Length: 339
Image 1: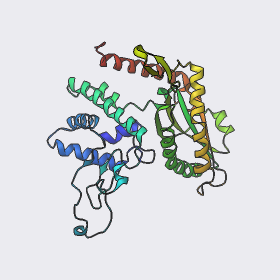
Image 2: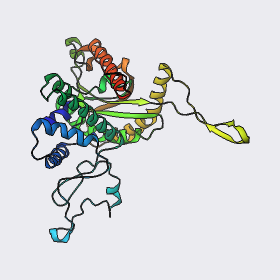
Image 3: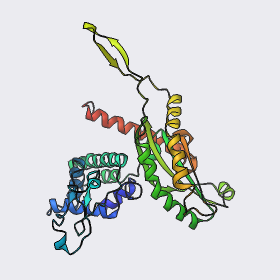
């Protein structure tokens, strides 16, 4: 339950979005419990993060060895076997079920969500290491472990998937379908040259509107999905530089990117992928019924709708500043510049 609460708070509890579902998290906990059968609960939580933060994916997580003899198991069902199935060899985060047939419960994990999971495991390990130094009894450190995800305040650039439906029930149906397709958009964007990293937020965000705004939109239900991302300027074409001895060396350098050009780059590099995604996955979907609408727009952080922040934009700006300072502190600690 501790791990489930942590994963939900950190925005990692979603198989649809490319993270891990309940079965995967249960198998990870079971795996760590097998490794440390006599550990206390607090110690198991610490071991959970320390083991997974250093785990070398795609080495599989196995709580039991898969059956080697398919016929002996009384079934001809195919099971996870990267030695004979090239599709299984492409899995990034194999977490294998102990029963027959053995399957990978984390098949939806992609490059972007795997990187997010690695960062979160490392973050959990840092917090638990600090907590262990205090005897695993500091309430503030435990609270820090369960801090909600900072996706909405961490990234400068966001893709906003705005969904509208005539009723709350229709919005729930429409958003569930869109959530199952958003992973494909992330998988496309992660191969875009200018996109450095991506982090989808799995939960549907409902706007915290004032009574007047709520009355204005009473004829439809609205919800948002967010994908935060960072960009990097593409390198310049190779330029020959004369070296001693008559040899030439190609130098690739990128110019500094201003805030304005960074926003233009972030907007333009995802435009084609979002248009294609809308046309092929949402606009013509048979699950889309009358009154259901979807729109994907680029928003810089300062242009995000104020209604999505529970405490308002001022509170969100404070959270953003604290996050930036905390990241700088971790960098200083890694460089040995802080205590």
